[in-house]
Image 1 (cartoon, chains in turn red, purple):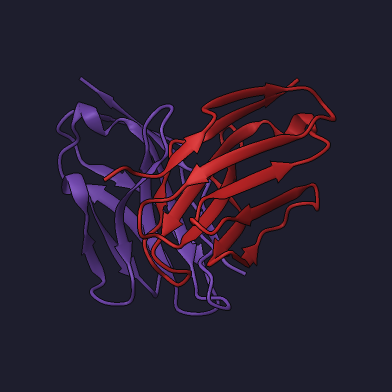
Image 2: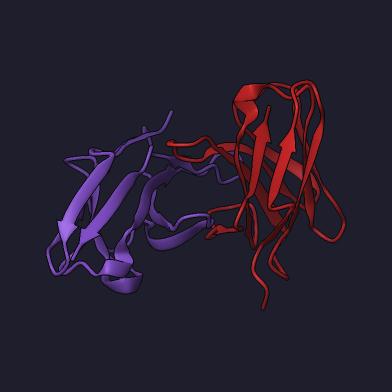
Length: 113
Length: 115
């Protein structure tokens, strides 16, 4: 079975622009979480979605938003990009929203110039 | 609030030597603890997890970790390092919160294995 897939793999944007990152979970997984990993740091939790509803939100500004679609895929949107948004964005899927093992995708590397 | 502290941002060992990566956690309720490994330009792979069962947890690739509540520690060990173990390792903690799972990660420890 395919693992978690993310697109695009790399992205370069300029300050003030908007970006959309996409994630497809493992087949049968209904929960998707998003994490931001700044260079040299551990991943930081942004959102968790389960059955198309937001189940958790990290300490990120309102410029960050996400949604989950009926097929359980997910999008992460970031508006008004700042230089500090440059990071690896990781998507993880799990069977449910509880304490199930999270499977991570390869990430999208976002560079903001 | 939960937090994780990984002592040592870089650890270097010789091939065949013991690997010890340190993790201390802070949590006001019984935690679940995880170790993940990240190879360059890749996502995270779960090595092992502690979920309140046995305190000594065995994972993949010969790694194991011991949960010590009195020391609030969950150190990762491997008896004999292999060149392929060179990667970055992250310790993470979570507790149930309103039906969602939020992993809180440490800053990571980069392991170098010397021939």
